[in-house]
Image (cartoon, rainbow over all chains, first blue to last red; front, side, top):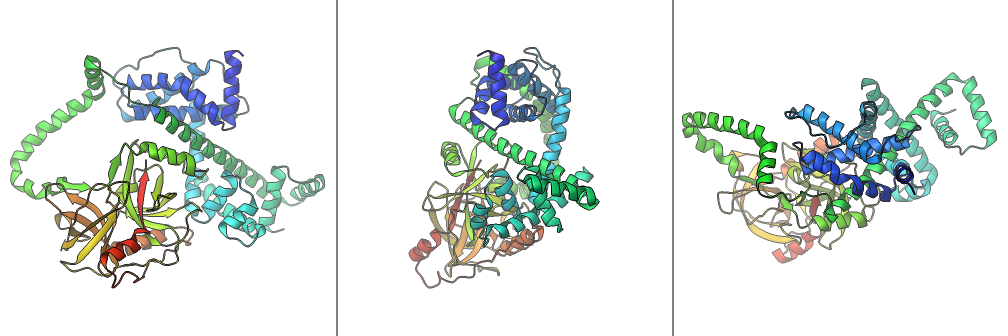
Length: 187
Length: 369
């Protein structure tokens, strides 16, 4: 299998939340990123953070309709991490020396803008989830995140039957929606 | 049609669960009723957002697991830098701080000569040590536990700094799985776990945290946790008397440790009236442990000790727990938070050994990273 095909497979795996794909990408790329961050005023924790964020950017790319990597995965990860790290440095105003450029990069500005927007959406939903409180949070979590059946949820949360649980779920959903849109409009 | 019903239909419509017939009927309804149509558009968008959120949250969870595995395997680690390379690295990394520090040092040396008399009074805080235990060696243990007990519902990556584990103590204030511990024990934890004296682990969430009083309320999430209908102790509302005999249970190591002593002053560090001063052995890891008097009443929560003086330990007065719970209830938007503070007197009249034996079940090790 050619490298391109392999990488394509990794991205498909990533889009399906496949841990093996995630692990493979970590193994291939993390050391390079850590070296880059460490040699540019960063710590191991910074490297972890940056890499994690880049993995989310990559995931967003892999799940978008037009997903195509026009370069090697390595180059892509390096470019994203480099951009993210430069931003962080500027933000913390630690930006004193010229950042070392270890290898070629591709422009990723657009993607990062998109990522930032998606991140805001994520945070809005996250805050809304925090705000609805229990048992709504656990209920919605069980249904939408853990994809449990209404039957299981009913017995776990002590509802008399699946229909009751369902009604409760809808009520929670309406509440969540309300909070979400209020924040969404303010954002 | 009821709004709830519309939503239900819509969800089935979006996920393609509808039969052809239902689909046609629903599309017809959308055409004829603008209210339904608008609701449908809005809800479809919202469901899409929720789906994306759920998927990303699950993905973040996987990222965390993989990351932890990489840490275990040593792929993510501080590289060993030697000799001059290291000096260069440290210099590069810290030169700005060194410059700033030098300026501050110079400034301080000027100022401090002026206020050297006052200094003795204000220096008290530097002697205050929080009794949370930083643990490197238990990291492995924790990551192992992550793999075995966590299924899907770990909170997503909160961006906190520490990579080492912490250990403290907490105890039940409601048999349904609510615990109290110190805010400083859990505030930096990405994920929180509690372990009872039987070695059973449960994952928990911090549902309320108050830095002012340095207290936090945790809730055990795991369904495997068996709730208690009765807790044998109570929480004391009034202030206790000097000289009262007390004991504490805590986790300065990975098993529960008993300590006993007496109440030595009615105020804490620097005259802090929300705390007691105790004379009791306590070590990092004891933070968040209950201080129990001979009547089986919890009178305080261990928080810190004086590093300069021997056997001077501080504990937050138990009446702050009531304030904490009130605040937590107010902060809870669902108004569903029901914490019933224990009023049991099952420890009264028992000797110490029996009291400890009864109490043990309700004191938990709080760990996390």
